[in-house]
Image 1 (spheres, one colour):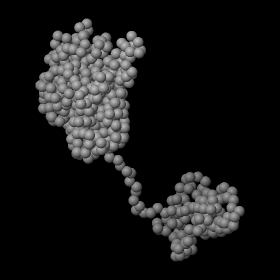
Image 2 (spheres, helix red, strand yellow; image 1 turned 90 degrees about the vertical axis):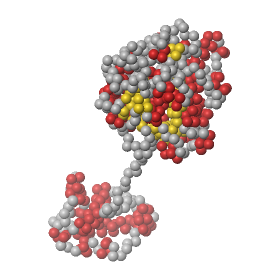
Image 3 (cartoon, one colour; image 1 turned 60 degrees about the horizontal axis):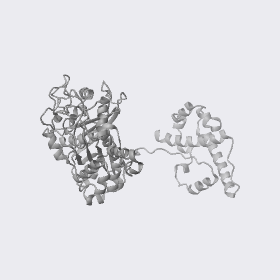
Image 4 (cartoon, rainbow, N blue to C red; image 1 turned 60 degrees about the vertical axis):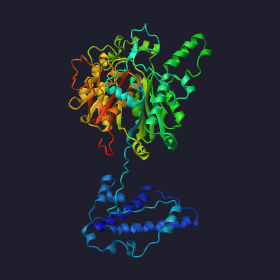
Length: 565
């Protein structure tokens, strides 16, 4: 029955629709004046007569419809049309033979040559109704699935008060060595704060051209040096660089304060005359110029810009750079941050904010996150740059993979210009969004490199947020890199990301120094104390927060060929 009714329904619908359109419109298309048009008109007239004859004989006496109209048969509503599609054959139809309804030629006893008719009907401008019966068992079209591109760390470069390469830097962290000392670059005897994480010895030899080195602000020199060292650490020598697709290579390195020294010098020159101003004072003061100069030097034509979100700058840059790789806009990205604000105007500005420690008599004890006796943060300077690379690209060139960048997130406190939200709402939201974006469970995170700057409000709010997110994880360990090198402002997140990757590589997490009198709400079982600790890191979280309520969290993990996360 089903095999008989199916062709009947298909033909019936096509025939009825064709006839009904003519009847409802009451307007036949005009035939062409050419002989071809006249012949087409005669054929269409015969077709209508044939359709009328079929319709008159198609239905038995119980289902006959005057005029053979689809509207008449199905009714004037869509409900009626639905009944047309689901009708059941009457007994007279079931007892009849096929030839009673259709001539043998309709079923294909002789092939019908329809090509010439189709061409001529197309020439008349008339529509052609085609009844198509679905083919049983036809394979469904499957949606194309695209595998997410994975981002890995293949190189690192740093310039800090504890060393200018990742290994020296991290070994000093593991030993609990402090990089805080008295400021020597200018006379600060009249300032209430006279200590900082100042870089005492730094050379650009072999990394930056001498001509540029004399003109550039230190934040750019730190950035270019750290970036070049990241490339060297990642095995990108001249041969490798030459073979790269430069349109798929980019630079995204930010700065919180930019070229403050260059800008300050320009202001001092202006006091004498504008003619005394350095013609490079504007471009070398802007935060984007470091990334631009790096791209010019390398010839990289991919994404190139900077982000400035105060002390959260580096994490924002890392997240942005990774997204460029994930979206396929780049295969290689240099990303991180740099700042050099230990100059009179920088020191004076933070003193005016009453944000700095005044423990001048014992500099190495000044930065003390979560300690009840802390009195503010300690300024630092330097740069950190990570070489981020698409996994398959890194494997193809045989790069050494240090860790995998799983993802990150950013939020806003929307609360105060310099103070954190008292409930830590924005921080909790940021961490949870980062976990969701990376597809990581809270239980998987067992190491946190905290923002922990040694300020009264900030340390506790972050700690409470971490407890809310991970408090039930007995394996969790938290430490603060700033207890050893101070706060590097826009460079902090990148330098701490290097420390986080080094912790993954070595299996050791560095101590948090100067935590001698913990706040009463702080559980010291959670905090890494004055000695380094062995830890097999599953997933590591690194936080960075900045003035303006900018929150950012990034996630790293050991690289595995088949990473469930």
